[in-house]
Length: 425
Image 1 (cartoon, rainbow, N blue to C red):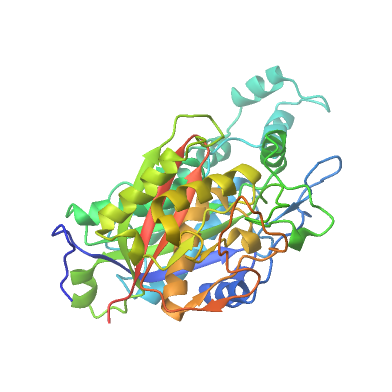
Image 2: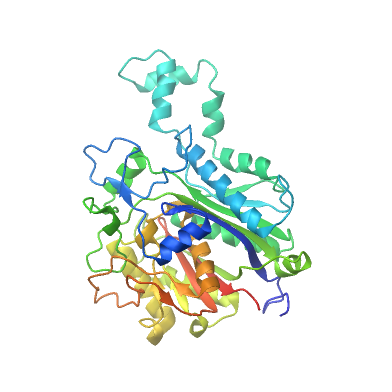
């Protein structure tokens, strides 16, 4: 096998991955649970849920973090998956990763527990007014708040800990962020700016404010009585997505670099495609054009045709509109094959990990190709005639696949598609 692609660019391979989801920590634990059709969705216990319409989520409560803010928790999850990915890759030395960091991170803002603590330090009583926050911010030493709630704090801390090279690049492109981070890493190696890159998607932003915001958009499932049955992508009775947490890390290298150091190759990032959709802040364009363009751009970047793809890891959120629009896109790109190509959704088991989804689901796609098993879409009991997909319903399926697609479609019209190939033999 040559070490350049159809356009003469370096072939980009993956030599290490790490993952945490509501199913557990580590790729082995996650893969066993995923292929067994287990759900990580459960009732929320981290904060009060009285009066909330949605009281379930895929929180990662088994990772202790003293500071419960989303940035601190996201950073801790990122640390753990990076450690796993680097250990599998065997690249560099401890604290000395030989490439840049590309990080998908949720929007960073001060949350209510920190706001209340800050106001209390100013002497405010039970009722906290905006003026109390201003007084608190203007008095005393609040460096810990300032440093934690800077957008770049998570990326900078990770870069220092793992010794990545250059300034860390932190991006937030809604639910496509993990795919965006992969694309940035791929492009950096293709341009010759690096021989390797560390790509991470992390999100631990299940908190009362975020839950309420998504609930006000009518985006969340309210099937609270049976959490494990709530996420049901492509089913006719789907009613919304499940907020979840998790992180995924990938070590990317040029094939030549990986070969030179004798690394084991997990799979190939063959192509990336993106397409913006300015139709609406949350809704997809009814004609599906941006989704169609996203997948076609990725195939063209990979130098592949639709008939080369043997599996699609769907964005598959379990919202009525998203799943329908993804089917519109897939049917346009794959034509007569659309109903027969396997299209499953990891979110049926892990929920929607938001900013981290693109990275986590790309890792699961790599494992799908590596192990020859297609993860199921669970809770698929009532087919939707308007979405006639082969969603690998309820039970995993053995299948040898050479090329697959991982889709990530975000609010605000930010769409990314990654084409992933099996490891060269």
